[in-house]
Length: 274
Ligand code: FES
Image (cartoon, rainbow, N blue to C red; front, side, top):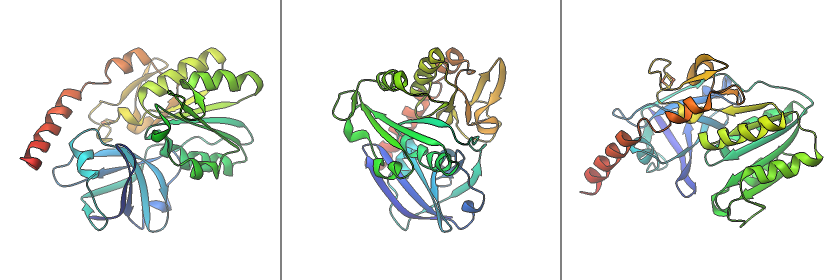
């Protein structure tokens, strides 16, 4: 059992969860994830590590189904059944380069350890956070700590650049040389960024964490075709070259378990509220 030190809704539907553990920090590296299970009946949920120290690890998650709804109801002092990790392959580090790091939704938090590691390796870090509106952006101050430049992009124009991430990328790339683009967020964002940067000819690494289900390497749901070869995001990733991903194949399977998730959630809500 693992004790919850903090659970806080940072923006609507997105929560920070800090869990007590004195082990994971010893091996934790940027880009890795942990698996949590809220209770005995809960499913395994792989979540990006967004921070860690000798007493705890922090993760950020979005409420989408029954288990994440239960996680979102936790209070300080509650316990969760399982915490396992760190898992996955860490972000491949480069040095002395110029890198644009893009994050949306839960991916904004996932950027934090990665930009910290990029900065510690003497890279120039340009961070761009994006969302539908300014109230969905968070952690700008924290991200600024390890960013040489920080940009905000909102589709409704309430802050920073107005529009989608392409508006920022096209504008920024006109006058700057960039060696790498790194992106964390929903599959639509990672797909979209990969399409834009392919035409710009800039290497792009994307986190495919959202396609994982149990992170056991056995269910096969996280399979992804990379340069014609089948890989598993939870074992071979979760980060891949965005230009090598077979996106039509991946996007076609995006909502495979959507109806089961919705059924489970309505059952849970009926039991909870009668
Ligand atoms: Fe099940 Fe990777 S998430 S095999």
